Image (tube, rainbow, N blue to C red; front, side):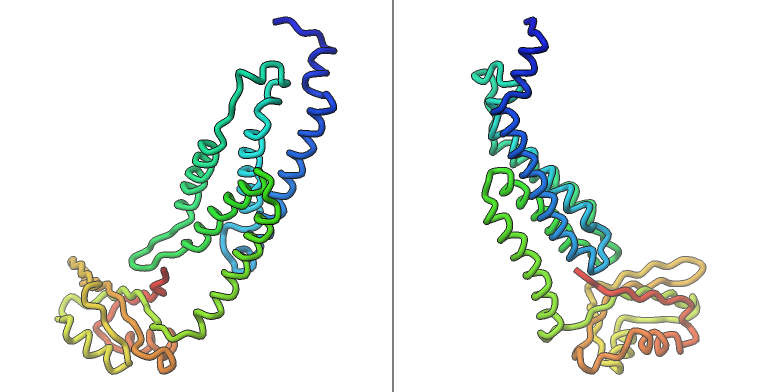
Length: 249
């Protein structure tokens, strides 16, 4: 099929095509703005994924969905009857792909899991982009503001509500010292700490014995600081190495 330059220009740069491109550009800018706004909250709280990641995810989602709505204009609109986009499949593919991106943001070390909120919010940014792409601008703005408010407000509420402070501890003992779960629980009881028996893991070699376990404070208000706890634990001469991490999830 031979087309002249004038015919190609009319296909790809016609007045209707320019209007569609302007609307798509507006959707891209809207997705970029809303995604960056959502990412600011994560960036403000020191998370690895910030405004750039969220902005790009939201804009890409908006672009992928927006072009499906104008399948009649694909390839210059020369053969609109042969091109039909399935928006549900595209949305499914976008959400699945962003799910893999979110999975890479989740970090697990022992019993400590971090990145779940960031993974959920970056997936949320793709949904916001989809809303922008299909033209639900009010819902996209409301969803962005609700997500930001929810994360900020609930984070403050969690610090007010009663909860148990949990720590993930790894201790290397002298090979000549005999420890037992009962002795460990009794020692921690003096500090107001509860040992989770099901979390105890023991590894032994010629250098010594490595105990890994999770503890929780019986009362958050009376819980001593991590620095004081580590100082009291290291006071025992049979402990060679100590590692304390927050058991986040």
